[in-house]
Length: 454
Ligand SMILES: Nc1ncnc2c1ncn2[C@@H]1O[C@H](COP(=O)(O)OP(=O)(O)OP(=O)(O)O)[C@@H](O)[C@H]1O
Ligand SMILES: [Mg+2]
Figure (cartoon, protein in one colour):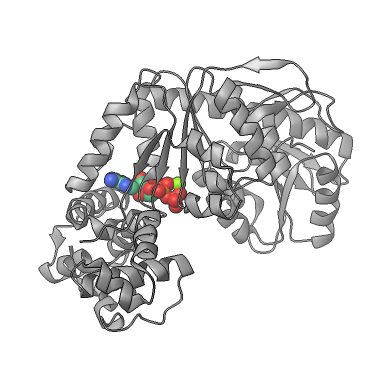
């Protein structure tokens, strides 16, 4: 099975969402439903949809409000409004507010399909045009990457060195460290910069849909495949394909991917015509792929193919020199966005920010600053504008025992290893003894986790 498009259905009546999602699901659309328009906005913010079908009359939010709110978040998603109270006036209003189409109840399902198909095609064209504009403006040059630390300088110098080769680069690092930003920088520093940069989030789709997304499909290869569809490999031809969350793909898809990496050729789903592409591959993950290989969740040959050039972006807590430059950068950015004049940030708040560990890395820091700007009463950011998790950190993390807050096992292991190394001033024999493992096991773990003993 392959996918025709990602659709969000919003209707306060569950019977209506069920009916439509049942029908469209059978036509091989990936359907998400909600009965709450506020939740719909959250979904649009966090995922990419090709099209939204929404009821005009809902108790919490009327159709026009919903359209405007969605447009602010995603200018490209196609919007189809449905109403039982169809009149020419509403239709005009709805289109003026930013919807693409309008249908009245009772819904003629055949007509709906045609309408969906047409609007999804249009939306894809729009997105391609936007990508073209982004390229023209070269939005992702190095001057978007802020930092002062030697660790970041090392990463960027590596980016510069490998940009012009065609080598596959595997970008690793914890969540929020800037993997996607670095992937874009790599593309825009390469000779492919005028060509497309296409991203695929491998974790977002189930196996079969991911294959259609990557390799495309042909008309008639399954029920409801109304037209041929290019996959991302074809879209990225001559340019760069960024495979995000590569640690999450199934073994079957891994096998197919391996073939493209080796031969640069593949077939669309349902077709036996072999296609050739010239694509530079970048991949990213926050997982420990060595462990995945050991657990037989990742093919070893694929792992080696991907990591021809491994690029590791250290967590923010290991490059604290970047914290203040980032704080200043985000202060300026969000002050402007929120139309506020901010004179600066108190010494005390600075020292708290520099000491904090940022489990969510730069993304977390960015959120902290945005929030501070929004809630600050004065024009200087002070400690009371920072979240408690930040201001309380030093109280919650005693050095002689790990804090019992919830975190992933991997994070907990890393934290314990870091603590042990710190306590024993980097002497691994002693740290290993304290942790109750062999020195060899410790060395392996340090390597696998890319922990840098201070
Ligand atoms: N050095 C930097 N300078 C400016 N902004 C940065 C920097 N590093 C990261 N950011 C910003 O932080 C946010 C997170 O970065 P990005 O999405 O690239 O991280 P990621 O490693 O891909 O995260 P995830 O693993 O969660 O997908 C983005 O808004 C990005 O623009
Ligand atoms: Mg990312």
